[in-house]
Image (cartoon, rainbow, N blue to C red; front, side, top):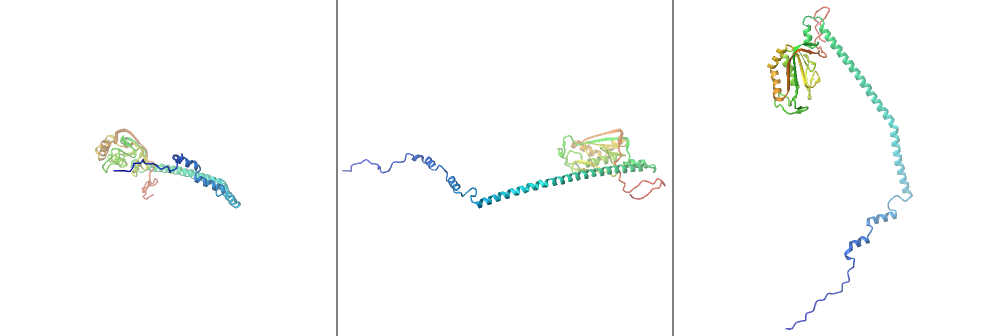
Length: 305
């Protein structure tokens, strides 16, 4: 068996040699294009005059006219503001003077009203003291027109210790009570009505004398007595037989109501008898369907005023 002789493979050398910097193509590209194309284009445009300020006479004239117009608008605005500043200041000062004058006038009117109220109250009290029968002193006391002094009781009602303004702990779930540990207007209404029912002859709350026309209401968290706000603790003074008055109040429904507030909701209550209680007169009385008796004839005059 014969065979062809084995020849060793050979490689062609036709391909040319590779560049020495073939492996550094990125650096070569950076060196060949040192300036970015965008920058080159902008530089060429600036050189040829395509951008920047206008080079022609007409373009420069339009640019100058625009600058002059802008400067003129700014100058006119500044001049107008400078010219109007004294007028605005004068009008403002006139308005301030007018407000001050009207405020002073309102204060004078309020002072006159207070003086007239005091004069009316003095005349009413003097009219009640005029001779008109043995019932005049009693009517004066019941109407709250005069100061009263005598034995009685002192009742102090205050909010719970852990109560904060606007709400707090110990919510009262019963609809008959307030929703917090604060003393409310309905509580003071029951306290005062309970003292009247127990036999009090005159009552005042924090120095505010109560009459047949008095009202106890609420405005937010504040308690108003005859539209005058009161702050806790609420001190209620009542003239009467101290021992009987205290016993009747404690044994009544309103005393039990107050005990419930104290035991269940932390309302602080203090009741004590007093040998000497002084109550001021009511600030003023409003006569709606009555007038003083005539002193000349001693006869009752009927009518309205």
